[in-house]
Length: 420
Image 1 (cartoon, rainbow, N blue to C red):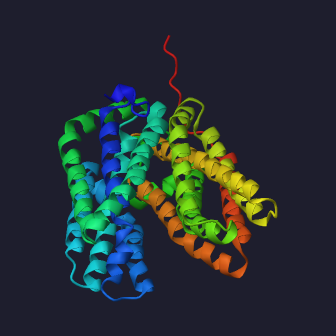
Image 2: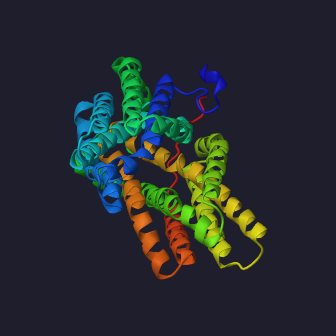
C-alpha cells in the first residue's frame, strides 16, 4: 500500500509507522481542542481561566522538552515514545472524568509532558532511520500525517461535542491508545538497530565517533551554522504559522476584511490543501537539491505571505481584491510551511549523523513551541497598540532575519560518492 502514497514511497517502513502515529495523535488533538474551553467554563470559571487549560498543555510541553531529550538518550526513542503516548492517553481519559477545574488543569498539564516525550523521541527516531538522501521526504511524510489528522479531527470533534462535552476526551484517549499499540508492535528494536547501523555507515555531518552526549552534544551542534539556521527557521515557523496566523487570521477576517467568521475556516482549509500539495515537492527538493535551497524558498515564502497580509490591511481597494490577496497570502504562507517542515528537520538529522541526539532534537522542538507561545501574545499586543499591519510586519521581519541565517549556512546534504 505504501507505494501508492507518494509521501511514503521508497522510504523505510518505520517512516510509515511514525506517520501513522502522527495521524492518530493529530486526529485526537483536533477532536479535543475545541471542547477544552467549553468544558473548562462548565465549572463556572472565567474565560481567562478556561484559556489557561489550553496554555497549560503548551507550557508543560515546552518546559519538559529538555527532560524528554535526556530520557530519549538514556532509554531510547521507542520506550520514551510509547510512554509519552501512554501518558497523554491516560491523562486525557482522566481529564474527561474531571469533577473540578483544578483536576482538568493539572491533567492537561500532565498531558503536555507526555506530548513533549512523544514529539522529541518520534522526531529523533524519524531522523535516525533514514539516510541523508531521504530525510527531507521522511520529514514531509511526518508532517503529512499531522496535517491530515489535524484537518480531519475538528469535523469529528463537532459531532462528538454534540453528543457529550466529555466525549472528545474519551475519543482522544482512544486514538492515542491506538498510536501506542502501533508504536510497540511495529517499531521493532532489532529493525531500528539495523537501520541505525546502515545510516551510521552512510555517514553524517558530525562523525559518530566524535559525538558527545547531553549538553556537550548540544554545544557542539550550536557551533554549526546550519543548526543555528534550523533553529531560527523553526522559531519563525512556530511564531508565524502556529502563532500569529492562528491567532490573528480569524480576527483579521472579521475586523479587517469585514467578513463573517466562517471565512477564516475556509481560508485555513485552502491553506491546508495548498500545504498538502507541496509536501512531496518540498521533500524531494530537500533531498535532491539540498537543505539550504529548500529553506530559502520556505523562509522567502513566509516573508512574502506576511507582507501580502500587511498590504491587504493597508489597501483601500475593493472587497473582492482584498479577498483575492488574502487567500493568495494564505496559499503562499502554506507553501512556506511545507518547505519549512521538511528542510530544517533534515538539517537536524544530518547533524545527528544517524545517532541519538535527544538534546539536539529537544532544543529544535523547543524553539518552535516558544514561537507558538510568543506569537499570539505578541500579535495581540501589537494589534491592540498599532493594528494588524504592525503585527503582520513583525512576522515578516522575524522571517527575514531567519532568511539571513539560511543564506549564510553551510549545506549539510551529503550526496553519495559515485562508485568506480
